[in-house]
Image (tube, rainbow, N blue to C red; front, side, top):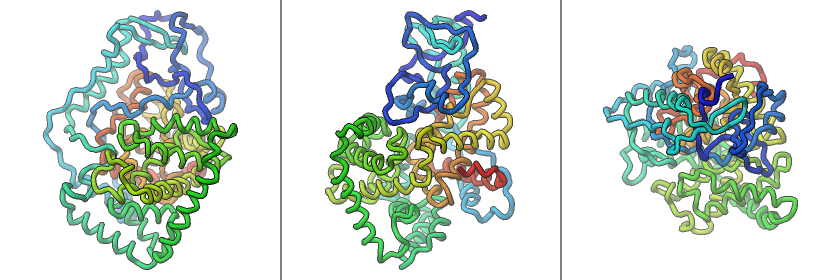
Amino acid sequence: MATEDRISFWRRTAKVPGSVKPVYGAQHPPLDPRLRRSYHKDKPAFNQSKTKKASSFHEFACSTNDAWDIDDEEDYSLTGVILPNSAALSSSLHSHPAVLVQNQLQHEETVASHKPSEAPNLCNVHQDDTEFIHVNGKVVKSRSDDAHLSACSVRSTLQKQHSLPVRPIIPLVARISDQNASGAPPMTVREKSRLDKFRQLLANPNTDLEELRKHSWSGIPREMRPVTWRLLSGYLPANKERRELVLTRKREEYFGFIEQYYHSRADEQYKDTYRQIHIDIPRTNPLIPLFQQPTVQEVFERILFIWAIRHPASGYVQGINDLVTPFFVVFLSEFVSEDVENFEVAALPIDTQRNIEADSFWCMSKLLDGIQDNYTFAQPGIQNKVKALEELVSRIDEDIHNYFKRYEVEYLQFAFRWMNNLLMRELPLRCTIRLWDTYQAEAEGFSHFHLYVCAAFLIEWRKEILSMVDFQGLLMLLQNLPTIHWGNEEVGLLLAEAYRLKYTFADAPSHYKR
């Protein structure tokens, strides 16, 4: 058997997947037992037998511990992206917004000549030369020189991206060029034409929702996004005269729930639910100042608690807290002309704050109605979607699929979070908002089309994946994909590729739609 100093290391860090932490009211995201951190450092345990694989999802989940306190927004300051394969589509697709977006973005894309920034040295992670290594399913200390090989392989791959241009630092919530507000670059003719089309559609006495979806697929202008999201989510009626009445009634209904139920958060049957919500809220987008404001955190606590007690089949599950943020930002942007990430929400009138909160609650509820099986006991919806992704990738790219098999990487280890959080922890919030424009427009966008987006997202990193040479390197890459500089162009190409995959694999088994 190989000695400790010849086995690849797992870098020492506070962000170790599988760290021991009690979880209340949530299914633990499954992570491979080989990555669990040992807290008995003075007596490392060794298991000579091969780690037993769980025979079911429930056993797999129960055998691991929670990892939601990992800071998933770690910024590697990396800039390179690999554009999806732009294979020729069938002539019947040429008029679809996905194809138009892909052609337009590829035509407009220009290469800027910037000096690449230096990639972080992932090998030098410990000043005391103490490392953690994986031995027969356990994590123990090591001072081995060879322990740097795994991290060096990650560094080597990331440094290959230096030949690509460096992007400027852009806001985490929305690009300046997306604001169409004071100080922003002027709109192009195409953008102005699209804005006028949205205004015309929304001004009609009865909005044509199918036409609205068609135009929303390739992105919604910032000014039109709040009302368009309300319409496409089914929260507002198409009839313009009825909208104000419906908004007033639904907002009053939500605050009726607050008066009726919120005081019960201290009751025995709900205190664990409220406690977990209270713990999770500060972790929601911790890099964005907006979500660290007490006023905003109180709003999120009320929204999540009321939703949880009104949906006892699932209750609150970690990850649902992320799904509030796009709605909150979009409805806040209706009253804010500057970048919203630093805006002081408490400065808004109380009635405006209440309207934003109620609208966020109802639109989040509409979204979750379509994917609630993702959050019921044992999360069967996510199990089915992860399995569907595995089968889909095996058909799309056999090399990646076999590569995962070779290094014993299970799709649950990275794709669970992709399904549970709808890629929100993999993409900046500005990208999520653009992604959701299309999800709102696409039939079964959150429940079905998301599967193809995940497949396209995985294939996006094909080159980096196939350059990894061990289990740890693959997991580190898949859990820290460098998308911090992504914007509308990258998301547009990702969605176009996802649509191509959906069209190409239209004969996929029916369980892909579960």
